[in-house]
Image (cartoon, rainbow, N blue to C red; front, side, top):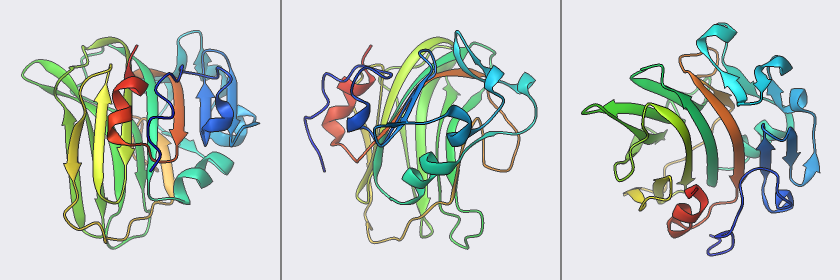
Length: 227
């Protein structure tokens, strides 16, 4: 696992695209996979008009279907079981109890392998959560040190590895769930934004950037999620 390499990483396409597996900046309109520039519609199944000055709209009003990750970008998710994902989002303050940021699943899988990252309400505050299930076993973690208010720009970083699931939001201390059985197999074949692949959008937010790395140490996450 890489460690201490990206502590000064700036968000979006800032000359570091080659160090990321995926680097999408929806504010700048720049999209890279493995350092190579790609067309947005080659990596996301969407209406290009949903990319606005606020980022990529992932809203109920855009229709029923979630936004699927496709092409070379999907291959980066489905070809590995360990990675670090960094999202910068602008929540709309719509009052939704839950906002699904990103969701991956195995369409035909008796074990129901899946992962998702979402915002949920607890005690009137909004927190970021991550969950994955592999081989019938599940792990979940809530970022409880830095709640996401109902509206505003937030950055979150999540590392999924065979031994742990870790999360940091807005530069907070890391929350981690340790896997007591890291030998469980895990594989997904679909990834989407705004809800589960094949289902409807159940979220209201703008995605400002999405960056995927090889798995980084949990201790790197606060720097990646910091403003």
